[in-house]
Image (cartoon, rainbow, N blue to C red; front, side):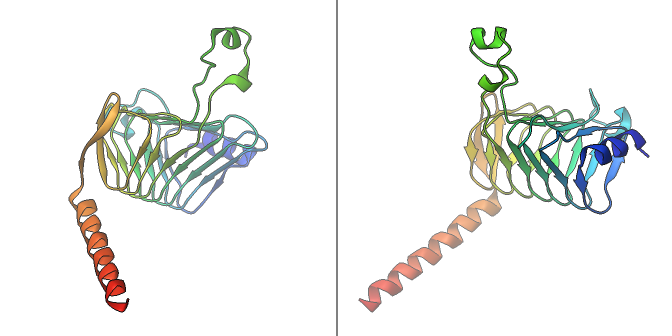
Length: 207
């Protein structure tokens, strides 16, 4: 039933679509002046046995300050995740996110020790995170601020991801890097290249 979660969502203005599935009590909190929206058929696992990879925590999805924005698309599934936004995090439809993954658009604390000791939250570095459609992120991955994953990317378990990656990449490691392109992405590139060549040839013939 996840009554606690649904009550917290209602009290903090979290919007959600049809067929939201909650296994265990997640902590889903929207700061006043921020925006948090879940699409249709979203599944959020938070109980220990809701994912056999073994969850260390309940799912935490929260906007931290006014103006922050979290958007989670249709048919997204997550397990024991942290999605923590000070500016913005977007997760595209049909994306699956493995157990204990962290998605953070900020550094949590200032890097400068003086600012950190003074508790200067305005000095915390932030940059939006964008995760495309149809991605798969393995368990225990860490997605850092400023990351942009194109549609259909696959992130290996335990990867530490920062930077921009085009559609169809398989990414792994610490720091994460592209280890290969998916066959479907290469095929799309070939089609696009053939179309471009054909168009250029047609333009040349018209001259």
